[in-house]
Length: 397
Image (cartoon, rainbow, N blue to C red; front, side):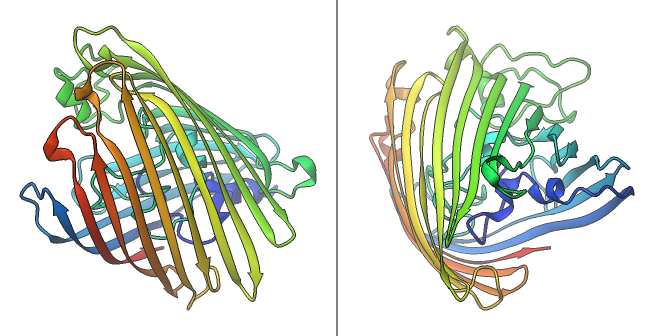
């Protein structure tokens, strides 16, 4: 889930839905074949953090994956394929996502396997002005305390699920790859693979990472966990002269086992989101991106979380080599409790300034500084003021 890198223009890859596969589906039969891709990120980061909590004030982080993509086309234009994402460094889930799909230009796409939810794939919001730190798309290696990522907190990403999307259609006179697109998904259990037995014995075992599916049918956890997630998203992409528009709406409903404590009843918690990203193509390849998002949901242990983000970015020449980008993002998030103050993670105010430079195709350098301020956390030591800086490079292939 943390691996989607929206680094360039406003309408990049339709938020990971592989619009190109749908739009370019061939009527000519193509045998199943394999291609290899992926990414490699290297970061140098430092911080001034109070209270420090014993942390270092600087460090080196990296995040990388190898993607094995297989794809074939039937004589009637139906595309069948899939992806396996291998962590290229030792990690808790050595295989990140693994799924298959079937799609057709006229009917849409269905995916089954371990993957992200439709809302995670379809979200649009503030432009990604600082890779790996954006309020819309992040890496788990972000050094920000209580990071303000605009995704549902009760979201079973990288879980075994089934997703279905309408075709990237031509409603309202749009060309393929634009117009209205709908996505729905269902995940029965928050498990990903067979590495461990299902049914963790404690709340810590669940919240510290995903459960293994075990063999046969999954054994529901009786302490605390997530099950039976319904997730739906919608996008509308269009161009109006020099303006590109990307709109997003999302809904999430999930069953929370134990609702935060073994003695508490289970509950179904819900949330909704909205977002927009606009691009003004100024001319000569330069553009101005601006947008933001809102989120409102009940999260685990039945507390309400509200948040919003906004940002702006200027690009001198899109994704072309030599292009420079500079941008600003802001986030504000508040929580209120209905079941005890100890469940809160605190209110958050956050901003950063990011600079990018497109060295060559697939090679992006970046640098940025920002501030994260957590207040009203029930634990005083978790009310953290943090100023951070980062320099890094992203390689995509």
